[in-house]
Length: 219
Image 1: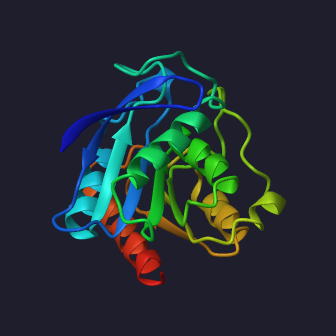
Image 2: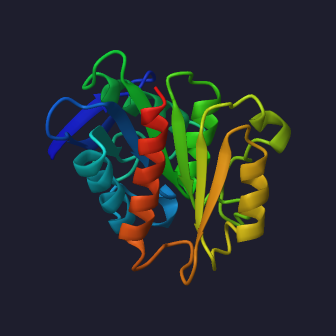
């Protein structure tokens, strides 16, 4: 795993890490972390587990990064709007490390799921999405609104929504209903855990990895 940096279209320098697989990568993958103002960064066990799964078991070149204003990344918090530029820059950087014909897989957790979804709607390079704990009920946490179900019909690419059974920000029945609004959406609910997926990191990562494998094999 190598430390890396790259620059957004508005000139913000972001820090990240690149994990390459053994052999030629079959896809690029980008990981988007939770809320910058609530302790979110690339350094969470669930994101480590997903990074390792996608690189070691699924042959992806994986980029984890810090959104603007987090740790060593430049700039300041952008309210979830400027962060779309961060995700876009991470995708561009990840794609520099894979063959031109390789796919792109984007994973977002919580705030990162909100950003990843909104980026994917306007970025045809994203071939599939895994959205963990997507904040359908953000409460008083500052977040841009998620796309309405009617807007999701335009996103025909595969989408996985994964949440814990006790996730108060992503209640299971609402997750299933939101997943059903995508033309190719599916939902996975992990019993006995919540928004943070404590002690279920490897299981969640395996579900994300299996979903990535299915989407990659269709290309």
